[in-house]
Length: 68
Figure 1 (tube, rainbow, N blue to C red):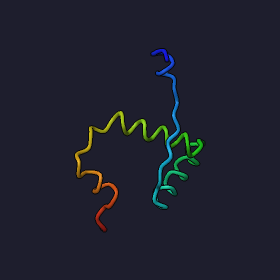
Figure 2 (tube, one colour):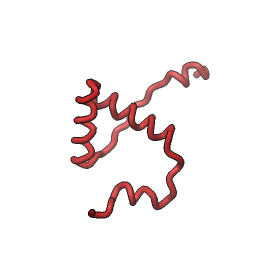
Figure 3 (cartoon, rainbow, N blue to C red):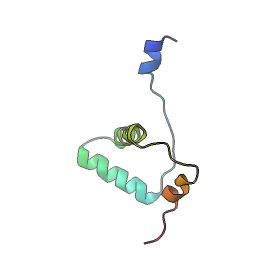
C-alpha cells in the first residue's frame, strides 16, 4: 500500500461506554448537528492530539472517578 493511501485509510473501532458517557456523547452530537460516530471521531482525535501521554495509573482515575 502506498504512503498516500495509508494516510487516507479509515478504520472502524468498537468500544464500550458507560451510559452517562453515551448520553453526553449523544447530547454533544445533537447540539453540534453531527452523528454520534462523527462526534466521537472528532473528540477522540482532538484528545489524542492535545493531551500528553497518560501515565500507567492515570486511566483508573479517568474510568473510576472518586465520588464527589
